[in-house]
Length: 151
Image 1 (tube, rainbow, N blue to C red):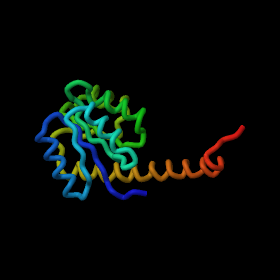
Image 2 (image 1 turned 60 degrees about the horizontal axis):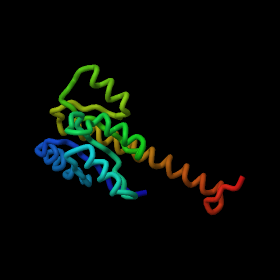
Image 3 (image 1 turned 30 degrees about the vertical axis):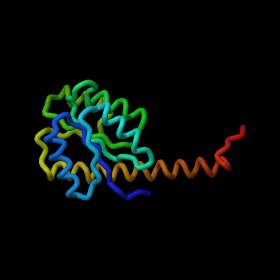
Image 4 (image 1 turned 45 degrees about the vertical axis):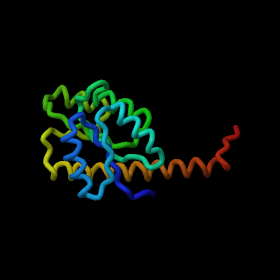
């Protein structure tokens, strides 16, 4: 299992991307950044086997918003832990994030300690889900020699 921690930060504000990147890099996390949801999906597809474990995204993005990004991501990479970061703090926004499939919800401005705690939890979750997925793949392979299922 790969132990490198990888996070994709998605925000249309370059200053926020830079700030979050520098905070995460100080924690020895490999950081990818995107200014849009479309760019984020491209990065995720490019990463392939070196997958990103955590997506940290703003909700308000030009073009495709963060909610739509999360929904699409759940279909193509369901094991990525998703965290919404937003300046909007109403119950409706929180419920929309839950419905879209976000695992966590942080309110801007987010402190370094809150971000760190959210990431510790997220990496534990990603590691757990990855372990379960690896066991499932191994058990399926054992039940079908050479990966062939003859019925």
